[in-house]
Length: 205
Ligand SMILES: C[S@@+](CC[C@H](N)C(=O)[O-])C[C@H]1O[C@@H](n2cnc3c(N)ncnc32)[C@H](O)[C@@H]1O
Image (cartoon, rainbow, N blue to C red; front, top):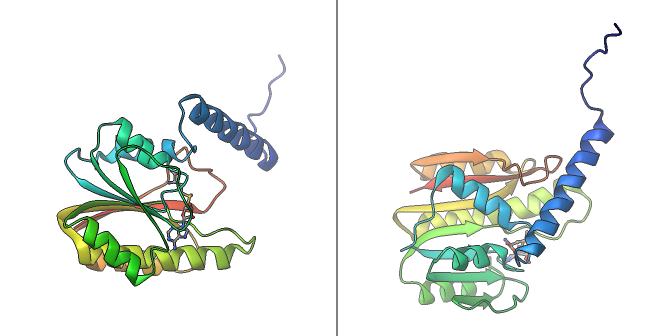
């Protein structure tokens, strides 16, 4: 009998499987009328850590094209405020602010609309340039702003889930979280491309 040695998958086979899985998620999102495959990341993370509570005032940062807000509406959440530097097609039940989150005027607008913020979800990512360290530096700088805003504004026991990238400034993010929040957890959802440096960090005040 001929015995075959069990070989681990080559890099190109892994990439092929990952691309295929990604395409499946794009098609699945379309078939369920979600605007982006990003919806599966939020769904997966919430299944794991169950941090979204129906009565919460939820701030969705970097919300466009809108699949996370769509998911919240579908699940029966009522108080959703979404913000993005790009326009977002309206979603019934979601208030939208068009603007740059790092702009103080936009942060003031958020505080005017919500007198209490219980949960922040941030999927903010800058447009990629191909220069990975520059991209992670730019996105992670905004993530630090988001965490700082969360630290100042979240109600007691409030939650934040935000995207960051492994790379420039990631250690600053982890240090900041450890010093300011009572609980934190780093998550890499299966629905996030495994070959990307994208990560999520969940923290509780
Ligand atoms: C990965 S997409 C978010 C996808 C979204 N969660 C969804 O489910 O459809 C990242 C978003 O971050 C937004 N963004 C980047 N920089 C921003 C900033 N400074 N303020 C607000 N939004 C920003 C981008 O315009 C983009 O729409």
